[in-house]
Image (cartoon, rainbow, N blue to C red; front, side, top):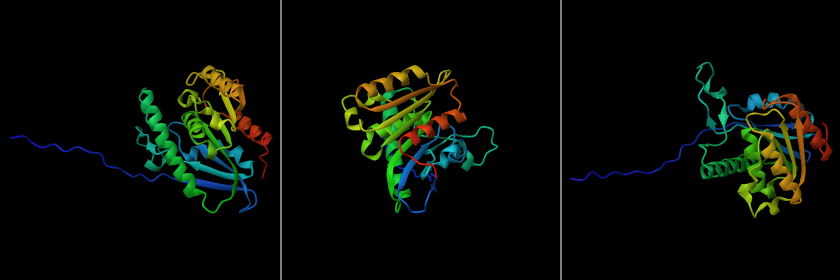
Length: 233
């Protein structure tokens, strides 16, 4: 007698926090800046690191990544655990699939979070793991983004072969540490050079730092946005 085996997949929903900080005159049209933190970070941590950016007149949207990273020290409440944006095992198709899923998640959060707000333009800023995602998000959804900032990450230009032209209106800033041993600067520099040749308005800034998110990365990002007609609040 054969036993019947039934397999399948079921969805599991997890609540993910976000936070909008409005700087400038309340309700007035202003830019939207979306912040994507790094691996094993959360929005509370990232907001502190981005404090200098909050001097800009904008809607500042901090989104927490969906995948929790277990705190092996058992000292932190679940709400304070670090998070990850995507699942990566070294296989590129899995990587891109997970980036796409995370990008769809960001779409939904932006739609929900900004109801009733009037934004004049949108900037997506990502650090490290969030930098990989911000680059993918901007190139896959160019109609949603005007300005892209990637800190200590890499824009996956190869994933958009033959499709990058649709995003050539983007203003792109890459800030990278010359001593970064986690995400080497040279591959990102080559991606920026490629985008520049294809008509993108690109800027690559190398700073004398490693991978750690120190204030100079934030200050360079803020100064670049000020040059792009963003204003201090």
